[in-house]
Length: 244
Image 1 (cartoon, rainbow, N blue to C red):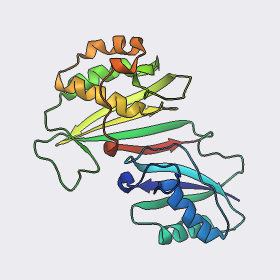
Image 2: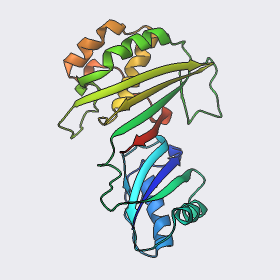
Image 3: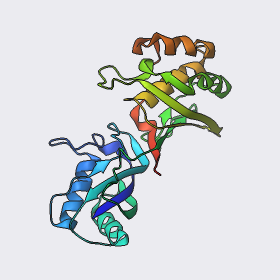
């Protein structure tokens, strides 16, 4: 049977999603737990590979197993074995044709910034602390130039093997509540480290170091060196993956 999992995790203690030899990863930890339950090796396929330190609220993965358990039993059994920084939020049976990655129609990422003068020691691994005040209005103005169908080469990590760098960025929503600024990005797909690179530039805009009107030229440059720095991994969350 095929089973779809919706997962939440704190990525602080992991070397990213993808299983790696002798390194602690989210996929590896889940597969080890699944093998204990299923009594057989289980391969888990994720909707996306989050980098080391990146978190998730709605990562989706699927697996095949000859062990027939109800979705509730899969959820309970996995959560009983998993460490406290990984949780199965839901499980459901899906057709064998379902694929967590290739069946996905839309993804949403959230980036959290703590924009306060004093660092919050209790949230230091969950938000990017920027003590200098950010101008959210300027950031929104710059973000408007990024929404739509563009070549995002300037925001794709150097060394990426992705050949198609055109992405339709459906929406960027920037909100501020007290000392926290959140940036939500929605698209069918994203390039490697694209969201963190976009956040890095938008923060430069927020500080006044980059003018919002320069965004079209940065896109047209198709050069990673034309854009801003890469935002730290620990502020990023895979928020949601949507399917038909």
